[in-house]
Image (tube, rainbow, N blue to C red; front, side):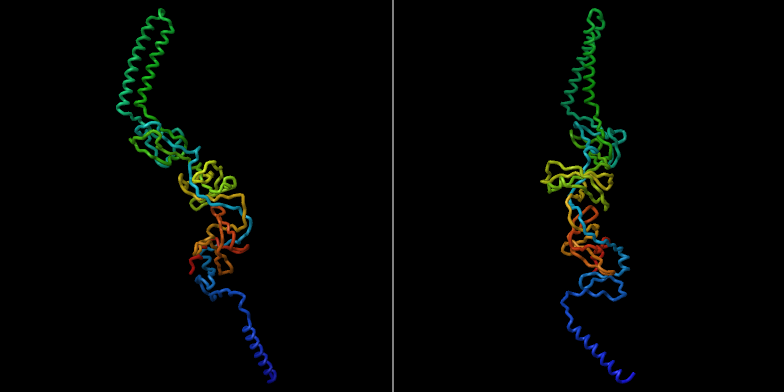
Length: 373
């Protein structure tokens, strides 16, 4: 290479370096904050970047079991959250009460226990009537009077039978019937002193409550046992919006971490705590439910709104109590978005703002991302 060619090459390089320096000095930096740089290649620990986003290596993502779903913005039914309580179906549950005061006696198989299966008409216990000394004396006086009347009637009937032919047959029959009637009256009165009252199961099901022990003295109309059919339970929920009474199309609740569909039965025309009472039927036997248990009912209405359906686990609470989701922006980067969300069903939530269509929302492991510092 000649010296003239070398000189031209050196001059071209100097001009290029001078132009690059001039262009960098005049570059406009007012387009907004630049994205935080990712950590150097080879980093294996999750990190929170300067802009608040997270760097999660692929190996950690697999270890945490992170899962995402693409946001699909569409028309979703509007749902409301109601507080409900499990109650027994009026046709599949019942109470066992005593019609008179008395003392509890156990049947041959013993008193029933909680959870015991019983069939309709089965004797659960006996109530031996209790009377005071004054009442007992009055009853015994009535028995003595009936004994005397029955003895007189019986002698009369015997005498008429001996005079058969001289006494009309109608008189003989009347005397015999009078004696028999007095005998039956005495038996009935005697039974009221001694015969116990059997308490029977009103429906087939399981014993859900036992309020007595052997030998206990109970009053009339006191509830002694409760029997329910666990396959026919209902839920009563309170709605403070009258429009819900006619606008519910479906409902669901969460039982032991699993979603259970409910069938809307109807609403009453009597307010309770200034709210409408909505009744739902549980279509299957849920052993995790018990009468009196409080449940959260998600009722779906006919109204619709725009949003993206995601599992409930995707929505987490931010520092100030705001709702947020994590969005998977790049292969190893996650950003937190503050959103507005409302329940869609017992297992899903509708995100109505804060994310765009097509973004990948973290549906499993979002709570782990919130712990990265």
